[in-house]
Image: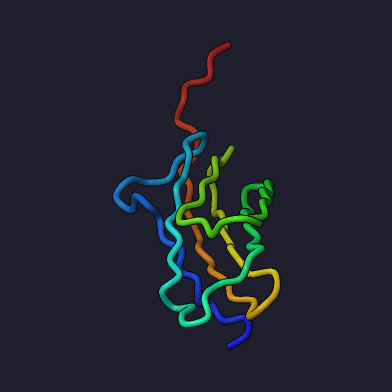
Length: 104
């Protein structure tokens, strides 16, 4: 189906909570897009806590993507085919706030 959520996104380390200022790794699975497979380009969009990260993959299908949140809050990761079947994957990631001490 065109526009189906056929790309699987999962946290690479589901045992540790995501934290602000720490890289969050997301595994990408394409098992549900067979037999056709995805067609490049793929667009990555990460939004949350007042920030927006965008990247386009033109040469390779990523098996992992990463982002570094600046603040705590709910982040949404979307990886989508720009054309073809417009398949996509969506993952919501809860990010804990910064626990570093602030001194003046």
